[in-house]
Length: 220
Image (cartoon, rainbow, N blue to C red; front, side, top):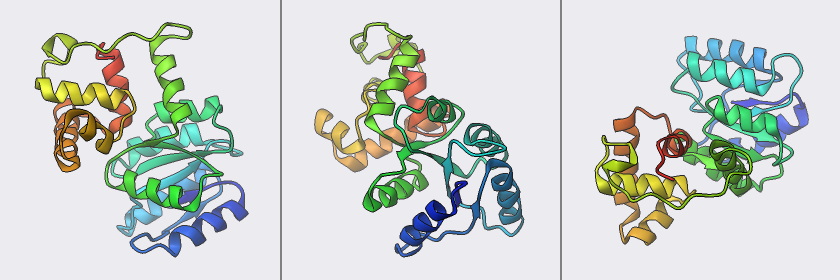
C-alpha cells in the first residue's frame, strides 16, 4: 500500500511496484487518516498489505501518527517511511514509532523494490545516514561513540547465547546479514537463523527494534 499526499508520486511508485513479479499494490491513500480507513477495509476483505510505504509530511494526520496507530492496529503490516530529505527529524520519529525502514523518495527503482521485499520478509531497511543519526540519538547528542562490549551475558541480555549477542552487536553496527556472515565466517543463511532467534527470544518486531535494544542494554 502506498500513502502519499502527492498523486503523481503514488502513481509512480505503483507503476514500478505493480510491474514487479511477486509484488501487488492493493491500496493507496493521500493521508494518514485515509490510510487507516483503507487498511481497515482491506483487513475486512483479508487483503491486509504486507508493507506500507508511508510519507511523513502530509496534511491532516501525518506519517508519524499514522505509523504509530498502524503498527498497533495492524501488527502484521510493516511500514517503510518515505521522505524527501535524509535529515528529516519527522522521519526519525516515525522510525522510532515503529516503522521498519526509512527510504528516500529519490531512491532508484531497484532500491525501492529491494526495500519492499526485505521488509516483507521481516528485515529492516534504513539509509546509512539515518542509522548513524538514530545511534547518535540513542547515545545522546554529542556523546562519543563507545567501543563494542564483549559479547556475553554481561551485556545485560542474558536471554542470548554468546554467538547471538555477537550477532546482535553487529546488527547494531548496521551490518547486513551478508556482512555479518563475512565478519564471523558464517553463511548468510546461518546468520539469518541467528537473527530470527534473537528477535523471537527478545520479542522484537524487526532489526530496527533490535538496534535500539542493543544500545539500551549497552551492547554497543
